[in-house]
Image (tube, rainbow, N blue to C red):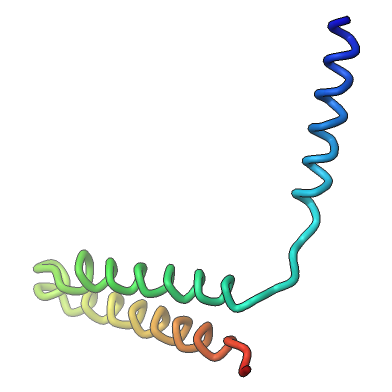
Length: 86
């Protein structure tokens, strides 16, 4: 009896794994998710790295943090351009 139950569970798990492996078509929800995550990263970077006393005190740290902030802003803009026109 236990073997049959195990086999049924294993078959169900196999079906679930196959379904999980199938990719749904791309939609703007994925773009929105990435854009939102980029916004959070930019906000955190600004609040917790760029606007710190360390970045204020050391010009090389300031330059590096500003360069990273610019790169993140560029990624944000790039993602924003990926929304499909309706």
